Image (cartoon, rainbow over all chains, first blue to last red; front, top):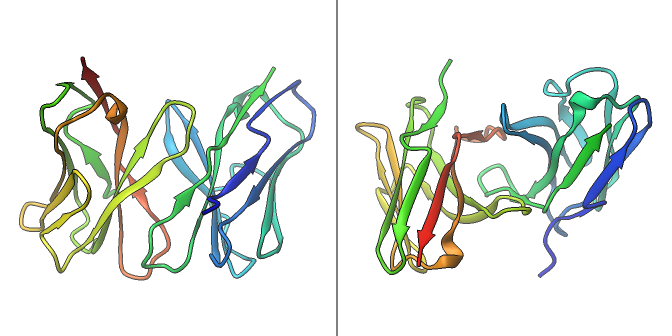
Length: 113
Length: 112
């Protein structure tokens, strides 16, 4: 079975550039999550969508971060403009219901120079 | 604030031995717990979960134990193999809340 698919796997770009991360959740899952993982902070929830609607974006660091989910099979996380402190691994996860486990993609390793 | 934490940050295990990874949680309202395994360069992978109406659940080579009295969760891996080397996270949530609270993670290294 196809799991959560993220692209790109790696992204290296210069500060100030726009970065777009992409996620395809598991088919049939109606909840989607974006996380950021760093050594210092571990896994941080950035935003949560339910049925394509953003429910909680309180974890989004600042206005430079935005996320969309135009349909049930696609979501994007955008950083504009990017800064070196945004360097991290960004994960997307999906689940079928609140009482079910979240399943993670393999992440995008983002480096902002 | 309340949080999930792990007792030990690293664990070194001889191949073939059993591993026990511990996790303490502080939110007495948590009723659903998950163990994840994260290998280098990959995302957290679901291993096993347990609800608060159970105190033990078994999977393939893994067993999760839940002690609600002392708010303690453990993951036991039988006959540890080199492929079990990874970081293991426990996570908890409350009822229908969507938020998972993750522990800091325990790095397990399997010695040949």
